[in-house]
Length: 180
Image 1 (cartoon, rainbow, N blue to C red):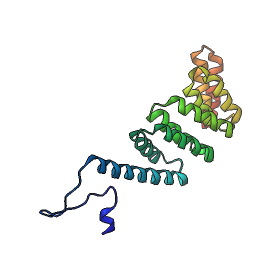
Image 2 (cartoon, rainbow, N blue to C red; image 1 turned 90 degrees about the vertical axis):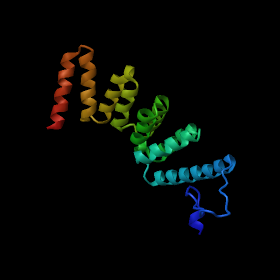
Image 3 (cartoon, rainbow, N blue to C red; image 1 turned 45 degrees about the vertical axis):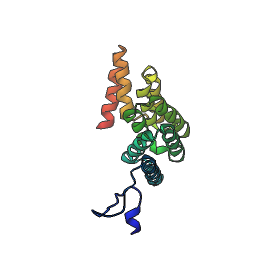
Image 4 (cartoon, rainbow, N blue to C red; image 1 turned 120 degrees about the vertical axis):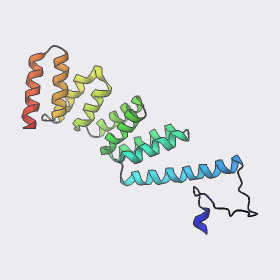
């Protein structure tokens, strides 16, 4: 009987029963709010053990934004990246690509870069979010890992667009050697 009364599950009232379904907005809002808080807790708990689960991050973001608590989501993922820096890719994907929160993604990337300065992927993502600083960030990525092909190709593209064709060809050649 207890399972029938749990939040979020519709209650079955037999036809002709004297039991009335209370449809007052306040009761519905309170049970809906309790169900949302319960779901938020479950999603956050899951992310504690699987911080790079993009689908769960998106679900949590949608839930918290729907509750009007987008800033709570940002603070949660910021703390998550402090504890588990490798979660940055999924977190920034949700923040920037799904939610369009570029500044929040940048802030977290800078934080993760301080924690793990030798992570070339963070530098490349910073380059994407800061196109005017792209060359600097791709060079930082290559300082961390001189054979990081995505940074070699991206930096070659920057040089090609800037009319430094000789340097672009050299970098493309290095990237090709890495792929071989």
